[in-house]
Image (cartoon, rainbow, N blue to C red; front, side, top):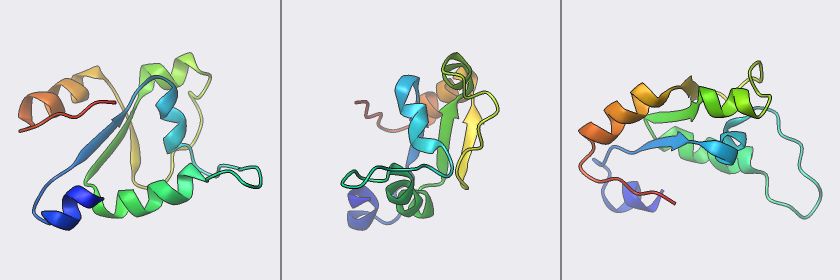
Length: 93
């Protein structure tokens, strides 16, 4: 991540919500010509301490029993609140 490349001491947490929970799913199959999010996420996970996916969002999309990629964890709104309250900066998109 560019943030950590420029400032290695910076701690970054990612929290996937809604459709973005799909980014954390393990063993993705990608059509030829499309980017594989799992491969891109593996390099991010190596540098990021916290990668979490909203459990309620996963359940709502039928991903209750889907395995997340190594380094990503099922989470909840309480953890998102804690991450947000302890963060110096919050970036959303």
